[in-house]
Length: 114
Image (cartoon, rainbow, N blue to C red; front, side):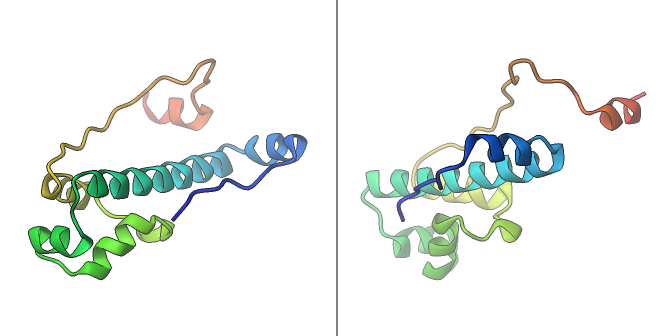
């Protein structure tokens, strides 16, 4: 699977992504696709087949195929599944938070923390 982002009209993109909820969905989807691509590349780098990874994870090849496809946005794998995949191919999964430049917290989020 080769990830090829769709070209955007910059004006339309800014308008669509101005909505915070739409932007969050867009960013989550992009992150899921990027992660799926990295999972597959890491497996291939280790010269492992999907069948071999599935066996180590005690699952079946179609589950690994779906995981690497990254196209099932609503049913993306849990962190536990991602950790198991990483471990099966000899990697460690790391998750982090990176501050967004000039980002403003959501107004309703700030009220809920008080």
